[in-house]
Length: 432
Ligand code: PMP
Image 1 (cartoon, rainbow, N blue to C red):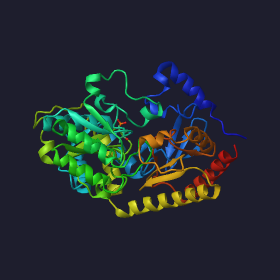
Image 2: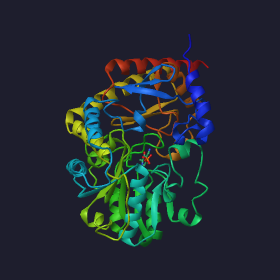
Image 3: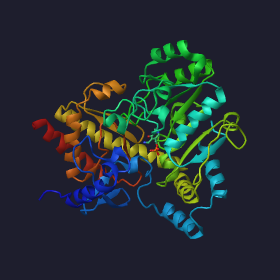
Image 4: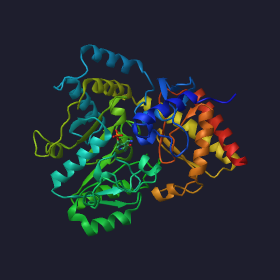
């Protein structure tokens, strides 16, 4: 008997009457895979359960935050405890400082941290700060990187923007868009050219140091070091958007992995342990430009919300242990080895791209180095693959332009089941 998604479809039909597109964020709409999205009832450990009662091994992890799995006992306890005390005060609480201190311990390039409510707010504020601090207007962004939906960053973006094939967005004025200069990922000459021409006008270069929002692509050797030196040369700021990679690729994120110190870093996802949080952070000299100490204004009624801080702190405390990253690496390696074996055995035109506990199966035989290469992947095969995996109880991000995430809640048996499902799906696609 086939799997049924009828309750999810009914719930989606109902949602569409009251919510644009039936969803509160386009990336979860399953548009690219041409089916109704699943409505989730609950999650536990590494598993999700939909309204029809189907169980899935989850590789979306709420798009990254759930690195410990769902309902981790320490996160749950911290949330329950805070709930009993009060969920929001709009006044300082000690847990904000505790979390900021732990972030500083993890990331030596950081002196000060300002909490916000989402990754979008984090990058939007970091850009404003960079402009205010340098007195310059232009920013350089990498094609296919996604930094949330703030106006100046919604140009040639990844994630849902790429999935839906949108280049910019109506509503973003041309005056705003023209201050954003876009260059391809892993392309040093393109960056060199832009800085030669506009160097003295560039406030910052922002990128995902390892991309997730056009699928997982690693920076080529020396690319990040080159970006560090050219931004320094022109006195522009280097902003690492570590909303996805922060506390995931290593305790100190991509900056630790590649041994590079950015001027500003943005966080989200894991830092909130599943609650809505973002943060931007950096050296004291730059961060002190923010109000109330400095002139650049930035604020938030719910910023530093105690529930979110507690969930984030409990999550980071769990991750303050190198063995956790060792385990993530082992799980990730086991899965990658299994999938790569399947691909070789079936001589399937796909390859796995992986950095730490983030990976993407690209439906292209060639190596993927930038956004253009991802656009040339077999998106039709991806859509069929996604559905074949879902029908076998494996929940993947519903787009080729996304990253899969490994959580610490996954067992070796879960990975074996995933590898077996991958084999069946690829075999089926080979014979179609
Ligand atoms: N930056 C990156 C690298 C992201 O992956 C995302 C979200 N996927 C954002 C920024 C925006 O975060 P949010 O959705 O919390 O606004």
